[in-house]
Image 1 (cartoon, rainbow, N blue to C red):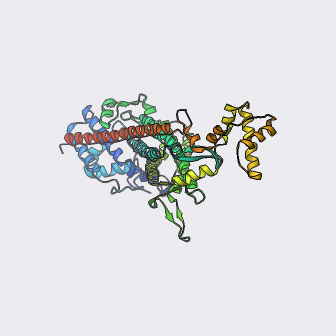
Image 2 (cartoon, helix red, strand yellow; image 1 turned 30 degrees about the vertical axis):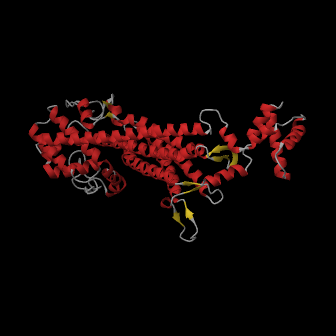
Image 3 (tube, rainbow, N blue to C red; image 1 turned 45 degrees about the vertical axis):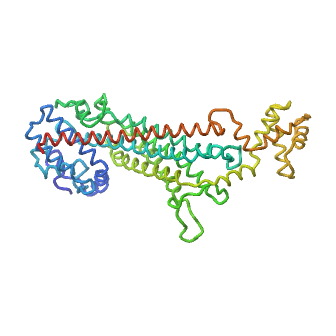
Length: 497
């Protein structure tokens, strides 16, 4: 049994069992390092608010703040987190009491339950982590745009079902990965707004007898507004489900990038080579250069989906249950940390990969990727409708695969007679242009097509939007750091330190 535990001698006759410590408090105490800065900011803000509202006299308040500032100065990794003491809040309270005595430390819980500093800290961690992860995703989309721009007109074959499909350009293919990642970054930016409302000062669940000013608390914590409903503010979990969902979606997009790139890196394709710094060799087969970074990214994606599933399942309990944040207090910091690291790795892979222009062009020229363009040409220059032209070219391809021979005007006319019973004259010049994959890739007038001008325009779009996300993230992180510094400065002033 643990001695000196919160509530022992009051409502409880004994502290937690060893089994509860190992199964419950060990996980809660382990969340301490990731939440420590936010917990400290919450405590400092609450103490300042108590003093300013008249709930705590200046002398006792300055003593409390001096202890909190000493506590704040202890690095999170050096703090003696002890599951036998309880969760991170109880660990901090024990240390605070050792520093300033119970006469001052006991005022820290006036007007707030233990869950409030956890809620405040988790929101601070979420807002910061979302900004940092969004910036790394924007690094990746920007890196892909930089790879794509000089290859805007370089010939490639698009593939579906791993089968050659249509002619395109390398730049257009690379941008296929950029846009989903960019949208993920922009979604993180939007969802971050859910965490900018302050939940401090709401009391248990319906307000407090202490005259705490919630708007002043919000200002101390750097929040632009307060959450309007006291109980919802304290127990809302849906923003965290959105956060985990957005991370899982972004991770899945990066996993698709990793899956495609692993195929492109294979000897059979040889379109891309990863940088040595993102690869590793086989311990047995010395010739192998394995794209190890891609396995790391795909594993992260699986973990992100699992995190979302765990959270959704846990939230099926009723409202205002400890279950929710028993999971989220440790899950959210870890998920965001993994997302930031993994997105940074994906950005480095995208920036460092080498694309073989020659191999990609050869793939496009060796496969009959212009079949749809030839069918288009027939529908535009003969009496055949498109569906019939499609059947005719399909027959030409089948004959060519089975018996060999050229795909020329004579073979197409013969297939038209056999399939449609129609006599056509194929324009030789139009056919030659339709058979040229480079000409076909360039002959796309639509917005977003493989036309080199369109590809360059999309590169500019991705680069501009990626830069905007990065600038926003950098500004937020700087503003949050300034807010934290101002809070600590005010605490030192009131403490007389």
